[in-house]
Image (cartoon, rainbow, N blue to C red):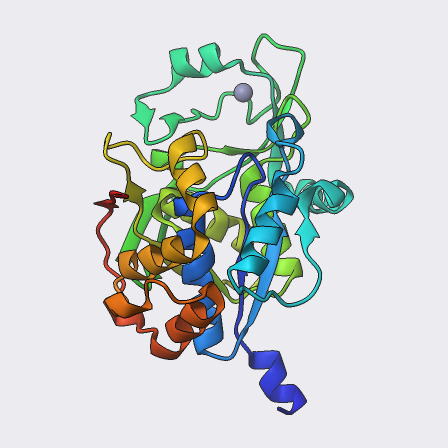
Length: 306
Ligand SMILES: [Zn+2]
């Protein structure tokens, strides 16, 4: 491979939050991003999203890495920890501020609720109250990114064309919280840019964050990655499988290889039944060899473990 090929190689990533044991939904994101990267002989980077320190469960990052290794996943380069990059996030905030993109907001959640025109998908839409200087009642300040009344359009590799108007559907959004925590949207974009990530594969629960992240790429004058959002798995009680759902995590820990088979099946790759008992590493290699993006279903589905 010459230098030019390397420069153009695909770089994917998997970025779990260490807030509990690796569960089925997280495994889907690991597997989907891995198959997409490895099918194209690309690199697959690993990042631990431990931004919000009070939510971090001690030891869970190490447990995830150990389990991934056991299942045969091989990542490229050093594991990136967001908790070690706060200085970098501040640097980028300073750049955005110098470009006039940011403002300080002293609104409380209650004040925003009271003045927001109507609720958005993820809470009230920020109505721009503090754009010309803090107007709210709190002394703590969050830092918000000013959005424009323009429509963000992108094509998801599985879900197709997506459209969102940030001003009308989200509002100016927070990049640095009043409690001092850097916002997820900021950290993700800065990390992906700095790591040269060209392809973002993750769960569809993050689909509605993507236009905000695309807007940040524009503000930082950086080249966009391609996006693929994977279907979500629901448990029998019809809730999204989450880190709080201990039972699935427990089953997962007891039998990683069969969970990998189920994850391949969930992603539409139709692994033959006789592979169910295969060692995880061989099953994963089968997955890369036989992976077809066109077979990934768009619909979220229930999954039951017997
Ligand atoms: Zn405000």
